[in-house]
Image (cartoon, rainbow, N blue to C red; front, side, top):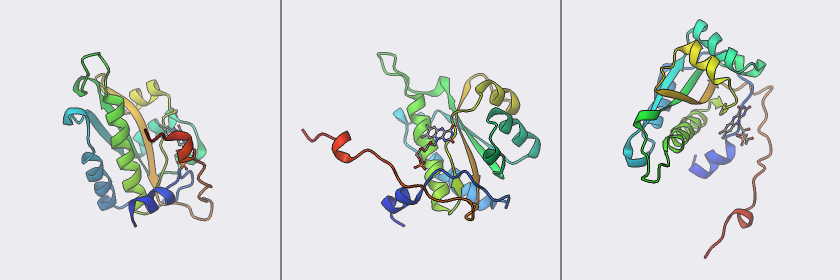
Length: 170
Ligand SMILES: Cc1cc2nc3c(=O)[nH]c(=O)nc-3n(C[C@H](O)[C@H](O)[C@H](O)COP(=O)(O)O)c2cc1C
């Protein structure tokens, strides 16, 4: 599948099967993540791959949604504050880098035929406490990952702004 088709077909999945995800697929997703570009190549990120039932319950407490609890695993993407590149006017590019690495996870997951959904609306304090994220890391996104429950899940219509609305050739 070419990139545009992958982008068109990917959607935020909120229905998962309990079926286990193979270790090779998790490894493929993480390998794709680590290839992400970053400002000055500082790679200010850290990933938690959560399959342990007790740890999963901790993650679930941070985002209390029925569909979220169905996922057999989670990847938590953290930004490492001390490692990110700061421009001389003070702008910190850590969030930008974390977003790029997160999108690699999202697309690699879709390429493998699995489903995921960016989740940012979690309770950060609960997540940090539940999985023991150290002070120098900040959780940026949580990805529930699993096989899609095709009976319940349907790709929504892609609603996007038109190119004319968001582009200017000058
Ligand atoms: C930065 C970011 C944060 C998001 N946070 C959440 C979230 O907390 N919960 C959720 O259900 N979806 C979340 N989403 C998914 C968006 O709602 C979704 O990507 C958007 O509506 C477009 O739909 P699509 O992904 O199916 O194309 C998030 C997406 C992004 C990029």
